[in-house]
Length: 110
Image (cartoon, rainbow, N blue to C red):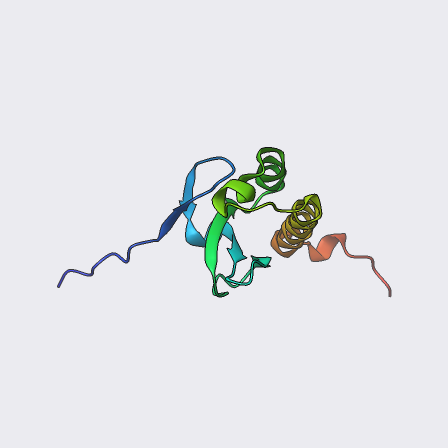
C-alpha cells in the first residue's frame, strides 16, 4: 500500500517574491469595506496577500509599499509600522519558545 504524500500549499511573498509554505507566511486581509488587517489565522474574510514571517520581509514590504499595489489602494504608513511591530513581537516570541534552558544553569536556592 502506497501512502500519498500530502501537498504543502505554497504562496509567494509580495516583499521578496520567494515561495514559502503557507504556514511560514503572514496573511494581510483586505475586505469589501476597504479595511486592511493583519490576519494571523489566515481565515479572515476578504482578499489576502502574504509576506514572509520575518522582520526583514516586513521592512521590505514597507519600503516597497507592496500592499498599495496588491490591493490597488493607498495604505497608511501607520499600518506598515504596525505590521513591523507585530512581526517583531511574534518573532521574539517564537525565539523564546525555541530556547531550551538547562537545569544545571538554574540558580540553586537550597
